[in-house]
Image 1 (cartoon, rainbow, N blue to C red):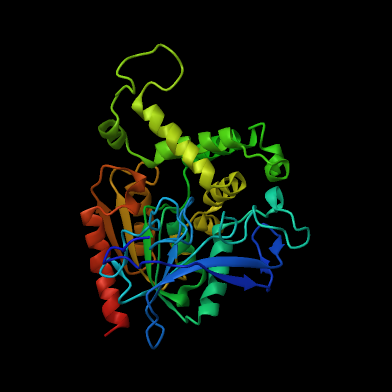
Image 2 (cartoon, rainbow, N blue to C red):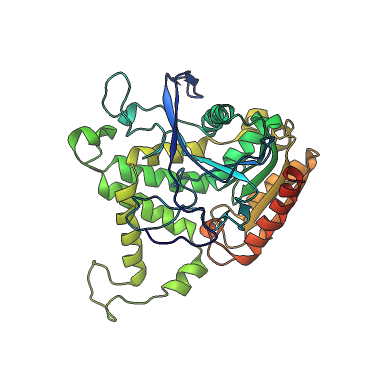
Length: 382
């Protein structure tokens, strides 16, 4: 690969932690052993107080910034716009850690991994994973890295749910919690979207009860449809209208059922490319983890009570055009934190692109991150 941008962390290599201590899961099962794949950027300071944990969303991974030597398309990590020298998560000042969640694909142990007892892929035998399970596995990684307390735990969407879980379950292990474009629990509408996506996958003739790898096939049509549906919900109506309108691919109507509108072509491309880089069983697991997250449910639907153990300072960010995880849901989090007597800052970013805005570099958004993290940097590097 050629030269990297000056504000890039450059070439990075994933690291692997093999854990032999069993992990008890919320579903009642356990993983006797597992691997956590992660990447780090920057350097730990002398007292190990400048570490930031990044929690990824549904289709994310450990590769949050920089470049891999074998990346065919040469694209950087999924949050490269915010991680690097001089960026909001400044790797000249912070040590940034991003693990791949258990149950994922091409990273930490998941359905496509070999079962240690059989040597065959776990497939549908991989246990259902929750946000709490992820956080407890990340706590194992924290101990391995010798980090007593995270300066910040940050994440967007499903990652933001992990941040909240960290603040509730391990309050003494983080000083700041950055919850971005998230919700305290999914609405019925959001659960419905996830169920349609799962049904598209499990009813694909090539799914084979989740054992498609043993048949040498992939449920391409189901996974493609699931991604197409999900992608629509990540974009705002304004963004889709501005990008596509009702533009025709060939400039005319063909009076058929093949691709005619540009938006149809775009969605099919997104679906097809997703099939090449993701796993169907993983998609089922990730969406279920989204559905199950509900800390207030353990406290008679009282979110204020759920946040009672938290000691971290919070920054909550939402986007006005995000209808999947709307600002109203972020304000529920903020209100509960305020009622619980916690320190919280809230920013509602005026935007046009929808839920995926948290992955981009909207100036008001990055300015907010930078300003907050500048204060954190002064705390850990006085």
